[in-house]
Image (cartoon, rainbow, N blue to C red; front, side, top):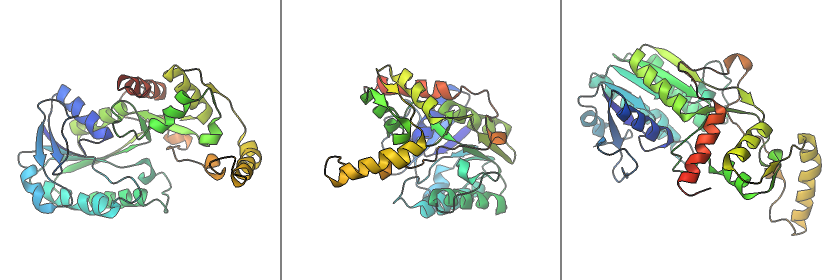
Length: 307
């Protein structure tokens, strides 16, 4: 099966391409002009194209059986409408015109129909708008939508997860609520890749939630501490004490010029994909689990000399 992969040099994309090469697939990486292919597996076919440029897509899709659409704008300041919505529309029209049989689309947990969307998140709303293109379009291909929670695992070349590990490796004592106050729902990138491959094989109009259990941030950070192999001790401080005691104290010290930063940023909630219980621990493949995800991420950072 010849599979075009958009976002092939991204975090999930690299893992998908490496896995497809090892399986019974012939991946084709869609690369924008100027994109480096040095982290792709040796010998992987590449084609030039940009989902924002509809004229570049027909030639890229020639002879393609399926598409894995992973390209997305994620960070503030990026063109989320142009890439996530309009770019997806361009790709779907071109895929339909090329006679593609199956499209697998990576969305986000916040856009899942059973999860309340955050209207203030441009990323979530853009992904939800992109999904409407699949549902409302009269295309000749089958499609699947994959909804992962917080992804960890190898090949984080952009260091998107590094700040989760660096403070633990650099400190002897870590108080998790000072860094983040929230539970985590972590999935291994291999579980996401496995779900993508499952969708390629099964086809049909399907939605796949890829989630683990909700895990307390203290337990997560203790597992991170074990995985980095340092001397960090993770200490649990109740959030009310953090919010009403430690944070005001840091703010006061900041005003005096003693602390280089204020306290407000130390008590902010994060969004790490937590779900109501009925939606946890789901995937169409056997999951490797959140502990393995943390351990493999730390092992990869060590391998590349970052820990």
